[in-house]
Amino acid sequence: MRKVFSLLIVSLVMTFSVYSQDFIVKKTGDEVKVKILELTPEFIKFKKFNNEDGPTHTIKKKDVFMVKYANGETEVLKEIESEPEIDKNKLAMQGKRDAQMNYKKKNTGAGWTSATTVLLSPIIGVIPAAVCSSSEPDLKNLKVPDLELMDEYEYNMSYTEEAHKMKKKKVWTSFGISSGAWFVLILLL
Image (tube, rainbow, N blue to C red; front, side, top):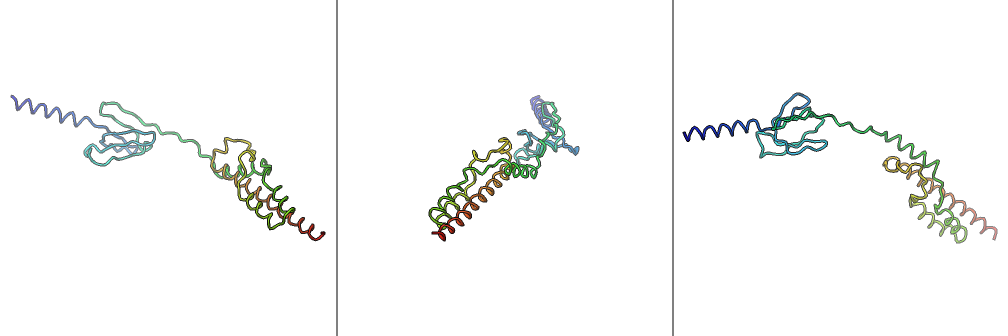
């Protein structure tokens, strides 16, 4: 009797272990016996049922049609709709165009460059010209029409690079004109 009772318990445990598994049904129709460990928004982490001590595997949710849990529940996975891809080239072009239209080239340091060059000499005037033209314009001077667009990397980089290019042009033009004025003053004196 004891043997029969032990055999009955062992067979119940074996039956329970056969049915206490999860299944992943792939979109290809393949069904895999697994022990699901974790579901993230993008992935399912699991161990293969026949090797629970083995490595943890990961599958993308977009490749899975359905999950059948050991408790009998099923979950049909819907494909996550991704946000529409923003055209990076359009953002970059818009950033450049907006900089050309809105950046007013104020507080560039061109005035100090001119004053130093005319009053002292072009040799000394090259120092503020180099310093001013090497720094990007301050954010407060950029006059960005839509600050939310500055969160987009391509727009931000394009706008800032174009504004910096315009600032350099203004500073070095100012230096050139001031150097010419200095030479004329030297010749006249």
